[in-house]
Image (cartoon, rainbow, N blue to C red; front, side, top):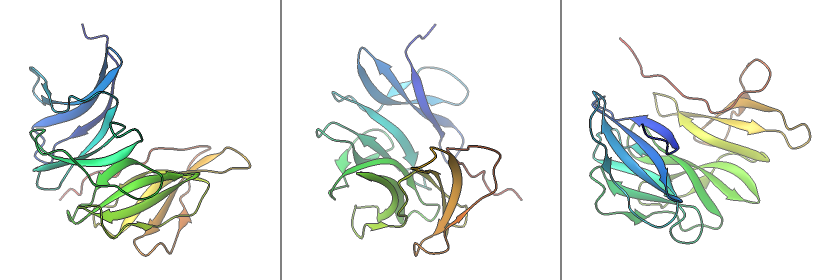
Length: 191
């Protein structure tokens, strides 16, 4: 029985495997396991915390966050764990990255005092902050790739809710949710 904490599970685009992060002896790495069960493959092996893997739409790459550089930043690697490279070089930290359905952008949480949702291209360029709340985090893409949902915690009340914004940073709105809500996720489009 595995007693190591496992977090942040994500399906591969083809549904054949699941990414997850597992803490072992004070170090957290990203693993892949077949959806049918079996042995896990360790994809990262660095001192520190590697979490939050999100596949590119074609399944060939994974974006994730790591504190291996001394602060939380976003990285990309091949789906087999090779060719790991940092892509975030802006002020602050980069967390909760998620690949866009079109494969051309990555949404993320930028932490620089406040928490804001931003997007950048897959090499880390053209970074744009889309939200200006106090604590906006955990972006998730709409299946059409034009809207991002996230959760916002209000500074004065501590209450959380689900919000969405378009890629221009405009048309921000709160979605009706019961009481507090966090960590939105879109389901796949079904025929």
